Length: 231
Image (cartoon, rainbow, N blue to C red; front, top):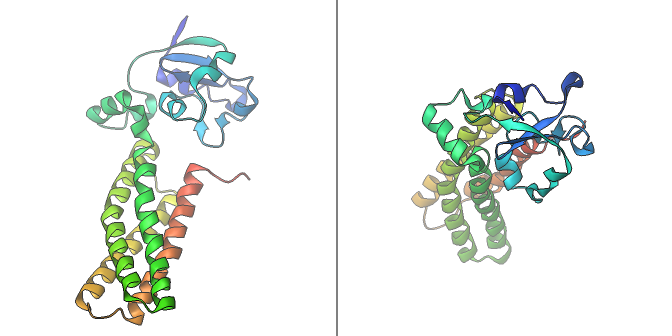
């Protein structure tokens, strides 16, 4: 049975009449006849010509779906071609824990999203019911969002480095700009509120309400990178 290098596998991506091969746990499969791989990419997010051990392990289906297709070779051990731009230690870690290539950022990014969307909600409740307890709860939630934000940004940069080689695409550029703006808003809100403990000012409420569209836009651009819209 033929042994494929990661470079050889990378060329079998279904483009220009080439076959569609993928690897899973050291085995190479020909999925060219699958309608779900007809364009060389599965579900608009999983490219062929690569080792998809991490992605398949996290998929809603199990690896048994690959049994429908012929195994045509084995994948030689060693770092995949798409990881060779990384330091050796990071290459070794990603080979041992393939889910770390894509999953740390999606796991952590939900925390600031939830907290920073909840803070404006509690601000609305505070204004509707004239209850300062709602506003204070919203501020504490904002603090949690501010604590979670650097972790989400850090893992986002790691994912960008691993999978996109720090290439500044349109979506990445917008996410960087919005993330910086969001951090600035968080700092201003915390400093402003802690220096005016007696009551929340209209300026404070205005900035809190602005968190919702900022977070929504960040989620939109992140979603476009993970689940690109069909054209």
